[in-house]
Image (cartoon, rainbow, N blue to C red):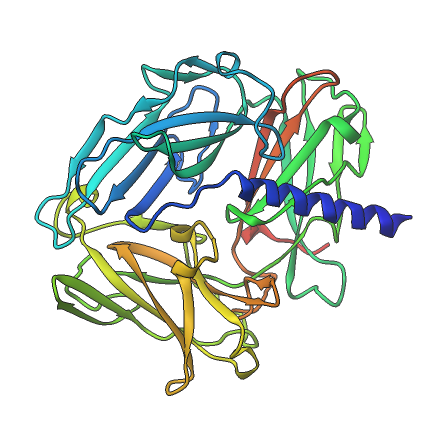
Length: 415
């Protein structure tokens, strides 16, 4: 019976992730450098307290000052649109034009840079919850979407990161254990009404959901699982910096300019799966737009960045991708690498704005994705974990986000 319950939970978790993806609209090739984050903290994903400001920015490489609009949708815990009407979760209105835009200055690649700050004089938020921001064109067709979360500090989240107790994975996995409590809210039927989502480095593709409290001690909920809340530790990210577009700097082997385009060739990444763990500081998969030549928003150049990684023979017929915050951790054709038999490497290119980037390589074989196939897994790896806590009292129409917890695995301990 316990195995059946675990199996059903895995199916439900997969369905939640599928719902997240079903609401997404991936940006077209001419939309680049989408940055969406809070103005109050440095998180690479906007998880904001009700009333806090956050900002979306992006570049349109067509550089025609096209009009864009924004639409906001309130969602349930599973990222399906909620039953609420706009006036119940928004003050003011959405479907407004983005008026803050500027053309690039003296760059080889022309572009128009757009910025949208929320809340603003037209649009405010009344409720916590999951939200989807949709950017539309003049014909009201979706151009791309981004998720964000608005929360209140109603519940306290106390987290610890442990090594896995299973000897098979003790050197490879990290376990997230936590407690939930609230002084102002009495949890009603928490086994059903409380839901959580656990993210590693803001990657929605491997998030853990549908984990019920293991113990209920008064108004304290205890999640002291081992297997159910365990993540593969992974390895530290590779990184490169090309803020000086004309120099081969950190992680860059060669640079050149041809046909009005810059090219940045990175060093070939080593195959690390069976190598000893070595600490290497990173920014948990994120990226920063930087340039030595002025204002990075409108004076940073674009460059064709060439990625490569050592091949492992048994994977030559499988799919290999480069990923990170710059790709929203998505594995799409735009980020796929191809095998070069002469060099025995997987290689590919991505058009990126200059700056500092973290990246890794993923393997997709027979529909199954391994984000750490090339890098291996280590319990010592520095990862950032985030817990979102949702609460829907019996009879309520939507899921509130009543708390957020965050902890870095540099504090990992043995069980």
